[in-house]
Image 1 (tube, rainbow, N blue to C red):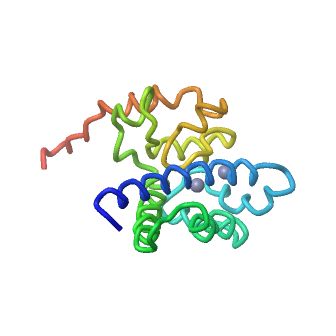
Image 2: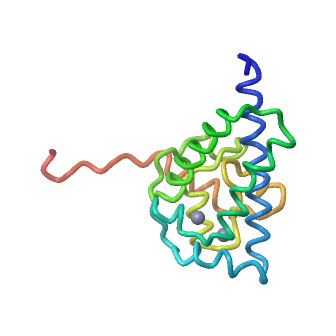
Length: 166
Ligand SMILES: [Zn+2]
Ligand SMILES: [Zn+2]
């Protein structure tokens, strides 16, 4: 690991995992495979626990990325551990049911995905299959048509002040 290879390999691995997740997820929505993904979709209003509400087959397909990537990318194992920790935290936030990070970088022309991104996947089913970025959904025409404006709408919401001013 060097000062330049750490961010380069970690960034490349996150980008590749996003592509892996998108296409595995699309595959899981195809009829013969959906039986392995239906359990995850019993949550139409997800919470952080929904992140691991999945079958063994779905978990195996998603997580096998970490086995295969070492044959493609010269990445040090501690970086994969760091990526897995990031994946765990971002997965929980993505199912949090509350938009913590609404900002312009989560909507066009930027490509980060916010909580509302995956929330719309659970609510509308056929949109937003990606993970960290919205790029594959934008390219393949599967982005929810109101995703960008929904994120923008959340950006200006201020927390309500309690009636007693506490
Ligand atoms: Zn799905
Ligand atoms: Zn989900």
